[in-house]
Length: 495
Image (cartoon, rainbow, N blue to C red; front, side, top):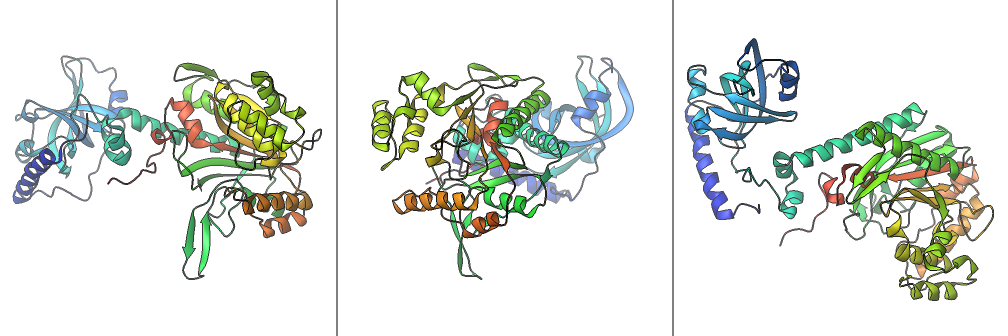
């Protein structure tokens, strides 16, 4: 259902404010400081799963939650806490007199504490016979109507707290997100990786081709950038030898468009391992994603929309150019220069950027004709050097790099390189990026002089891997939009 009309909402609020006043006149604090609990809905359900219909226990329990249904003038209350639902029975023969008087002042959405004994009704429902009810937070605004819930998408994202109150699916998605991140972290720690933290404010935006957010530090009178990626600082730690295996689960910010798969603020895993190359990172991506699915979902075959996706390793590995050739019959590796590649890309319906080079033309053709068809997991290798300023050149073809992106359901979910550790090569790559930047490419990376200096002190050969956590959570929760898996997505302000 849509939002409650403002006029009606104000009427409900006025009625609840009057009940609030009545509580205070009766000497009841409607917003007390504490309530000592010794049980929750899930614990009671588990503890008393064998309790027969019609039986009661001698145990006195104290639990708290939000009222989601009231029947028979408060005699029956459905109480929801973070673990589930339990029925509360408030009868005049059992309730203390002061609690009995509270029943008429309770509303849907109120948070209350209950003390009583557990029984199972003759109809088989686990119930707490309430002796005392304590108001813990009087709700002044009504919840959406119970049978329809909150279905207005804009309201769900703008008032996430309301969405979480009334939609169990939303709560389950965010809980699963937490579980996915927890399992990811544990798997890496078990393999000897060290978790580190790097700055979120950068003097130079680098580590990814993206437009940054700009802020200003008043005391230093200095413009700073919210990080677009942690890569260059993590590699500095690799230079410093803090560990041969390190990772960060990090927040990144990119001043770009919003879509079902893009939010300006997003979370990713980025890791580096010394003395290996990008082939080891393919194995790592497969291991992490398949293991997380197995542990969180109980298997590697997952539903997403109309597809069944199998995450069990190993996954196919194919070059970008080969995939384009397979789909279109055009071999970009046989096209010797940028104009020919750009013309071929446009013929395929792609839109290379203005002044595109050979690599950008190939990438545009891949995005237009191949990307969406990559439903089952695949590592796309052979990325052009033109669009990979931080990846080592391919050992067989200098036009390409030792870089791959992992695609699932037509989305990029991972990106990895054999990392450049040659400072001279890195400076040449940055110079090409600076030239593109001068030509109007706002996403091209500026020269980070200190990072090149760090490489001059020597960085071991290394593989690096980034995994987009938001997109991974979308896959593992069958969520159609990135906004479903982010607690508070970025929204355009209401007029």
